[in-house]
Length: 512
Image (cartoon, rainbow, N blue to C red; front, side, top):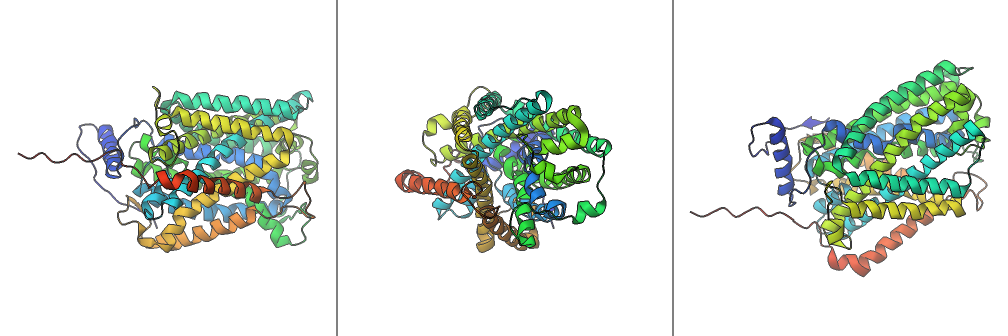
């Protein structure tokens, strides 16, 4: 299906590493951009960026109850594999485009290049996706606070207030900003470390759960048991609602594209990281999920838990209080790295948008500090994250709506470049080395249909009867975000944004 073609963009150099940097630098210049960042990220670092953003341990742990209560083990197992397959197809679609346009900005830049006659599409994609990354980062930092609150409940029997939890989330937002301000090397090393942490952490969790659980469930329970705590009568619909857990967990593979201008041989490494992160997460997530399903002692107990994160109850029932703390620490540190990575992606998006006059205060947002970090984008992400966290004090329902809107916004952002590839298959005439060949159109079509299906599923009520407390308000949050972006387009964007702005022009040949 996938063919990696060799394309020689080299401009010379004695060492292989220097040659690789020059290859990516020349490709960037071909796309109209001057080289601004040092290329210091290896495949492991770029792959780690996507692994961090996906956060297989964190997404699975934080959203596990969604599938457990909507379809139970049957829905979780089959939903995970079905969704992983379609997310893999989406990753292939995005990787092919990423290889062609290995630049910072990712989805936004791809849409601009493929449909230059419709700048509004690029503008909407860029703003929608950047806000989704900020919201996801804020969600991750609140999750960190909730994991710490659960550890306090398990270890000390102390229940933290919403104000205390929000204060911790604020501290984590600021911490994420500080780490991102340090620059490329720190984030790259952290991302590479996260790959090992995910592998090692999954091994620790799987072994702990399978060895210490007092009762091991049967294979029949793990693969066929159906649970329904939603109130809906349709078994099929209930199982579909459980798909949201898998999609929420697997979003983020495209994050590798956000650091394409900081990676060696980005036109090869970035698409490999996009696809590899989904393939790896599929397998790692399956191993972790199966251990949870074999070890869960009482689903009703998890449903009735008072812990801030429901999976804490599953750990507690299966392995006891001391090992529960160990399990939570493993997931907690993975969540810290994932949240940091989200702000890395959002700050790079702000940089890319400002570079092309699609974001105000261009001079400030394209400025880099001595650590090669676009610090304005970093700290705007922190500010928005702190403001969003405040919603948790007043209403957990309102905060959850904002977080759901982030997941929908990511899928809507995925849909834009894939939609162009389906309806305008000739929108790319000079592919990069990562190509799908004859499989490109059917893969893109399958990815597009899945994106549409999931976006509809994300806005449906997840409980019945529907009331003001269990209503799915994500459609309101997404609608509000789209209204803000629309107003901004007509008020400001349509006058200043015409598409990508070239920052590098090939020198004219000397005449002798």
